[in-house]
Length: 122
View (cartoon, rainbow, N blue to C red):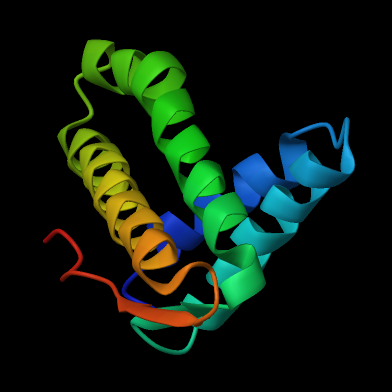
């Protein structure tokens, strides 16, 4: 089992619960599912060059949703383990978004990117 099962769960929850109101939103949710699939077996994932910007937006959206909707509930429930995991997901997703978007700019959306996840929280 992956050390990142909590992250995989958050990725899949958002990907499977978000209404695919447009092709762009559908692509972002497919990318979140792809990231989840990839990190089930390793601590890294790869985005195709054509997926960079949508992947960055998808991860930023995940972080925003957790920050606004889930983190306050976890904190109020005094769930220390859950809070640590949710904060890790938010921080990691935003850091990955930054790396993805910088790479997209530098390479003009022409090179895929492989990103390693930081150590999971204890």
